Image 1 (cartoon, rainbow, N blue to C red):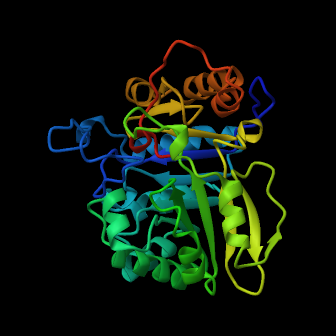
Image 2 (image 1 turned 135 degrees about the vertical axis):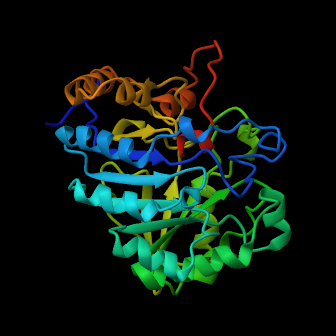
Length: 335
């Protein structure tokens, strides 16, 4: 059964945050001044167990969910994640993907994940320069991240590379990143710096638009437009004469709310219908208080069919409510 929201958008894709912890401190996600030794992370008892996650996915199968993406924090910090992946595939989900910072993705780990059913990997990389990397993420191990991209390409045959571009921070490295990976079977996805959460000090002056990125790349390479999936967050181009593809994720300048088919499940079991949401439905509480799957399905159906979220469209048209509403942190909701 397909369920649609108030704007006729179907629910097809779930992103699951497995942990609110990360071994990196990227400024646009978990700035070190806030996510420090005094920060209160979720207790183990507050996290969804793998069994609870699988129960929820089985309930969602009634709605013809097609894709699951595992995120964090850093998802590879969850022990035995391959067991969860195996369980998800056993539910009949078509595609299981993983987004990681790459620091923990060894060759053996990548093989184990693939053997248990993982279909694809996305790795975050924001700079090729150690000095810039340390500004964005003071805990970065650049060589490990680059190695993880090569590993993922070898094991999975293809990898997506997420690059968050910030004006006057790494906006002068666009050519370098494209040039380094142009001969690999990758999709380099340039992401506009987004106003997710409350701690990343976002402002419009720090946004380097996809249009500018496209223009910068076009000075050195020819780009051929590819067909975009209807629900895709990125517009895709082929790097003419090379293996690499280029993607642009333009949440700020070209919002894609109109085709958004995804929901998010936080590490502590809250179900959110938008990346910029301020509150969610408590899946964990429902799972631990009742074994009634029908109730869970009915609750999710009610949440989704009442959905009207289109934060980025309203932001772009300056029609956001004047009253400030706190937004969930990216590290908590999984991006």
